[in-house]
Image 1 (cartoon, one colour):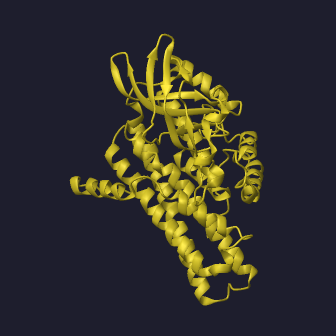
Image 2 (cartoon, rainbow, N blue to C red):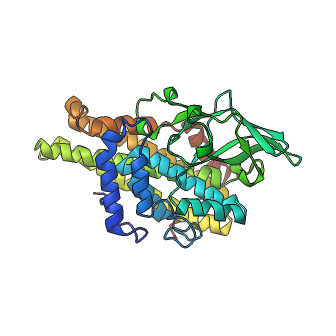
Length: 381
């Protein structure tokens, strides 16, 4: 059986603190779903235990260190406590990683200091027809347009968004950081988020029109956001959160069967076996993906192989999650999928969160890598 939360975790955060925080987050999840602003208290707790700054220089999961497997374990544990919190937290980590990769020194110092102080970062890339563009003005750039699926919109302090720009003879997709405190609250469309699950993520549509930005708010050059292997290989982070949700479903399913004294039933035992074996498989994929990421990014080699493995990790964990939900459904029946049982919300959240962009195209890209390359993934890691 997969070990609980941080038994196999590291010394990244003091164990009593992270255990307490994750337990509090899990216990609050049902109530948090009904908060329009989302999990504000949860991120205060995560700041207090050091989780918001854990990847910064000098901290336990410093991006400069080969700690990706441990980071994936942390993301999985947060997702297990609450998938909506995990989604927003993964966005925070993703944003800090892009700052680590691409920011100028003065920018790093500014944004790292804000993260240390407990400010929450997020990255919002999805948009509809009224997407983001930047108009050059005398003092900088004026933003036009909106982003959709802005997870944590009501609680994010610094939002990393992207939009079309013409700058210094270049044009393309530009990253920029928005101070959300300076954006009027009525720019968040609270009516835009009525999903099947993940309600607590508060992934609202946000209108940034007329917001002014300056050179110091622009991250890297146009087009940098799509740099490989970082763009596609980063999928292993949200896959880790997905697996945490599946682990929560398996744990609550077992708890439900114990409550009903059904664990002696051989059919239920077989279903539990399938769930636990799938979880173990998912964890093995995450561990290997993290090790490949650290090795190949540091060496600057095997970019295509890393993307292929990340794509496989993402899609295989999606399949694992679907299998675990199916087995859980068979275990608990209709009654177990009703309130007040946690499985009702957990199934909704994971079902919705698994709907990531282009799953079939992702599989085809991985297949094409092996068609075009004589390559096998070695075990020497």
